[in-house]
Image 1 (cartoon, one colour):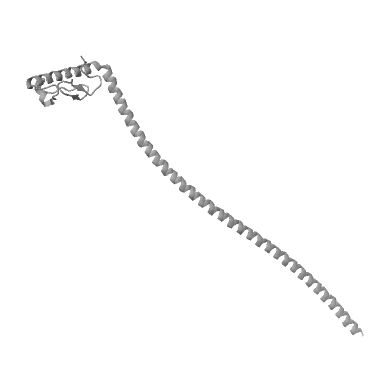
Image 2 (cartoon, rainbow, N blue to C red):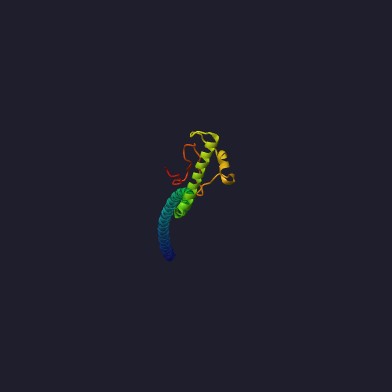
Length: 197
């Protein structure tokens, strides 16, 4: 009987040991399942974060593409504006050059007028003397040639009546019109005229 008791005791100890091992294994299994569940949850969270980061990156990429397209359009508009400004600048430079030339011409004209105003009598008096000489030459031409008051001589016709055979020239640059015998000769410059009698 003692052997049975010993055997029974060994069995009980073995059963207790197996229960302890089983309990320990179950505990480890529960711990492992808990860790696995926690790892799965962490994996799901990590995947969600990755998906969110991917979505954010896609949104940022789309925004960057949109910004880039907007910048390209603005750049194109700026280049067009620059070309337009260059064309306007060139046109303004041309207008400025034209205006400068006009101002220079006006200044030259004013200087000429001032010169003429400072010594108007000398040029005018010499021109009037030339007009008198032309009138006298016309009268001689008409007298010698039996011409009427309506006949118009040419410069060539009157050259013989001037010293050296040279037709007079206005000292101020005017142009003479000989006209008919019955009319006085004229100069293109205002104020250069024979006095009316």
